[in-house]
Image: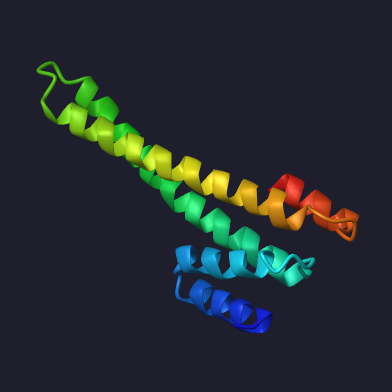
Length: 125
């Protein structure tokens, strides 16, 4: 697929609120090792922020449930299952963060042609 195809598919994924797919399309653009346009940088950022945001919301809910269970007097058998689930979400969060950091370091910040504006944008991400 061409760069334009990846960007178009990322926009479609955004409209359909399928952010995991949006991430994959924008990673494909980043791996072309050419500087991203302002629009492409924004699409990459939106994709990762939404993927991370959904997992963070899940983590907060699960953590709240875990705290409620911990405060119960009878300490139910459900607590280990809740903890295991929370840890799974935490691993997903870590993996997603590692992924974007790798994309930024390996593809987007490499090379002398990266503009100062782009560098600042990626460092802020």
